[in-house]
Amino acid sequence: MFNIVLFGAGRIGRVHAANIANHKETCLYSVIDPDQANAEILAQKYQAKIQTTEEVMADPNVHGVLIASATDTHADLIELAARHNKMIFCEKPVHLDLERVRQCLAIVKQFQVPLFVGFNRRYDPQFRRLKNLFHSGKIGKAESLLITSRDPSPPPAEYIRVSGGMFRDMTIHDFDMARFIIGEEPCAIYTQGSNLVDPAIGLAGDIDTAFIVMKFPSGAMVTISNSRRSGYGYDQRLELHGEKGLLTAGNIKENSVEFWGEDGCLSAKPEHFFLQRYHEAYIAEWSHFVDVMAGRATPETTGFDGVQALYLADKALESLLTGKEIKL
Image (cartoon, rainbow, N blue to C red):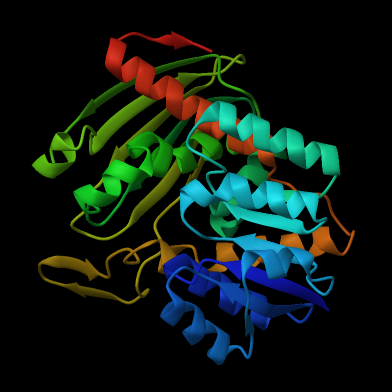
């Protein structure tokens, strides 16, 4: 049984706490959060301890840490855990500054501890099946990939100011998905964006609507369509076109019942948000990390993937600001 410490008892922390507790090989050992009330709620629910960071790092009973705290704490916690020989699961991103990420990963490499970066969409059963079918040769050579990712509603402007902006906060998942599906590193990126959803987002210095086009060495093209608003639910779709056919992964709906009548068909909306849409993905990625801790696997999503996704986010912003295609 692996004892896990959870850093962060907020919305995503609660998801991870349940998955840790529900896995037969892991135990939620303790919880740390600056909001003591949130930490106590989770600790009581799962019979876990409340510890300080110093206590966690010095505790020989702690095998691994799951970092789901504020983004600006990730790199420091990763380094601490590495120095104390704790296995590390960290929500994306490692940090918002690329050089700081590289410094952090150098420490991880020095101490040779496993680090998994939580790009959960790789573990969505639909997306993974699409990738596996493509790599088995089902549609031949990839020609174009369309990634649609639209949130149901925009976050508050206060969040925008600390999130790193749309590309580092939201599109970063799509950059990772493009690399994951195509299996190559892009060689060029071009971006256009607008502030159409909430004027406060524009005043905070960000956009809320974007199109990104990336070209890959094989010639394959990837187009990412992002919006901070989708009045019909959480819109998450992939369409991969190849020389021999098309693979698509559509939205997961709130239910599968359809009503057919004289006026046509009425069906449910897509799942409301990421907690519902990617419920299975969060479970699957934790199961993979347990395999890593047990020595049955090596991390499929590493610090390198975190670096590459953040690098693409930075270059997308450069393209937006310059209006030019950026060679990678």
